[in-house]
Image 1 (tube, rainbow, N blue to C red):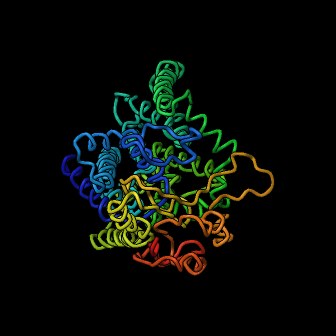
Image 2: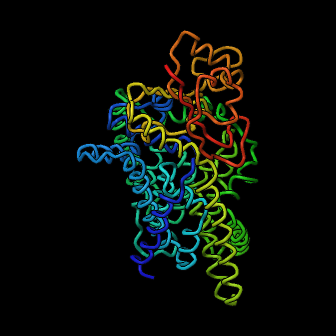
Image 3: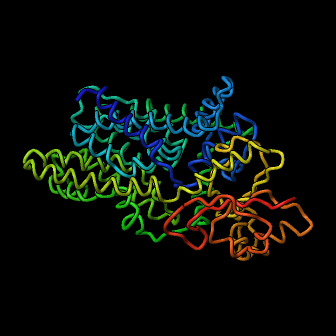
Length: 490
């Protein structure tokens, strides 16, 4: 297959995901990228505590800010372009990363099949999230001077790794063992390589990021240091939940691989048994083990943190399937391919199109409400913090309030309770305190259906105008449907 043909396949898959993946995954998809970019370009928005504390780099949001500013200049800043434009840009980058994976893998047909059918990559490949890190990491892997790749030792990957590390310092967890492997196999003198390549490139990229972030934040700041200080030293991530040490092994890693986990396990056994003839795969396995070990020590765990390990695992399994398929019968070959395909289609459809879509679908009618009467629109979101995007999807400067869940920065003595927890411990009390009887009520309250009976006193002054399906698996704070409730009278 020619590279252009393969790229077209990947572009079709990734661009299809832009319009087929219509569900909410995690708040950072919007609040650490699009909301920031919207504020820069249009002058209004909301910055979460991460930006006020300076633990995020502006490098990624500025990409979308440039896009938004171009639309603004051309007077094409339609809300749908603001919503889908960044996803299309991310999808195109992901498609190029897929092509790099194909060129790197060697197992051509299985490489295309594995990366194109992976349910988790389809689910996240067009999201404005850690997907950027995964795409850049895949490109860097394709540039890495692997054993047997050729006489020329390409060192361009060091630039990409350095950029990754300043955008998201945890990228160093995955790339540290790979850089050590590079120093073990390089044809250059190790000390010379470190002094003339690794250190200068790292310093140049770090200096550039410090300059950009300092200008963007308005004061001198080293965001990688602030990131490590808050997330490692102060461990603020635990405030947002913690999992046992074995969670990544028992749930996280198998889940993101899905049914591809089975060929990965078989490939791992082959690589370990014949490790002398699979040095590159052994290094990649070591990277997976090292990364999972380090991440397992951190209490706060999420599926998305493992996304950059996905192309590594698929590389190993694809090469195994390529060797296996040479001796397999056509019946067995098509059976395995069908099982892998169907096993990925199920979660891709349900999680990408059905589960947790109400908090995105609700932004359409809210935008119409806001455009119709912006001065008299006052939105109150009574749901877990950052359950929806905001101005990046409304694109109307209306008053809006939502429950916050900031960590205990003031070191408040005793048991600290954030605003969201305060609300859910006693919704009616919170509402009476924040919206007294003689005060002005919000024009619209957005909440889950499970909350409505708990705040029946204030809901008696509202009528439900929209009921939008969200999930089949409600929790104590997340309901079946999202409701838009409009205030009756003045």
